[in-house]
Image (cartoon, rainbow, N blue to C red; front, side, top):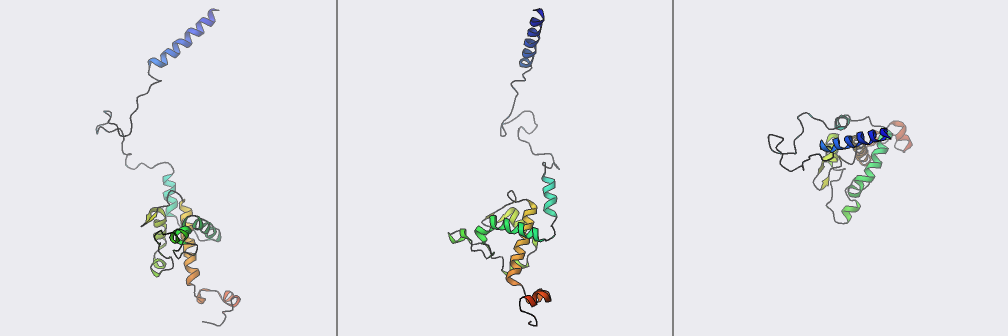
Length: 181
């Protein structure tokens, strides 16, 4: 019986100790509330210079590394292009997607000489940050998928502007272009 009383007394002292140290009611600040804790009087502070958010460094590195063009990469690029880009740019990249047919501003045609001459980084940056009426897809598409879309856009451009000289002799024979300029 005395053991039970001793245990009950210890539990009640422990619980009372938690409330006395204010563990159940912690002070907090709203983001835009002033706070005397910091010299500038603001509770919302800028991150320390050089701070990198978790996983942001890996994403930044992936954005800098342009992958090798493979069939799998182009298939992934086509899949992502069809999902994110074709509503405005249509599936051929000519800029006459379903959204445009319903009154939205027409995006540029990927087959224009100006866009055929830009470097791949331009397309990657536009996909990431947006341009004009297009909003950025940096938060929706991983860097590898953005590079895949860039590769697919280049494949679309090549499909509309390929010359017979770009083909191997076997490919020219298969298409019936052997001996033709």
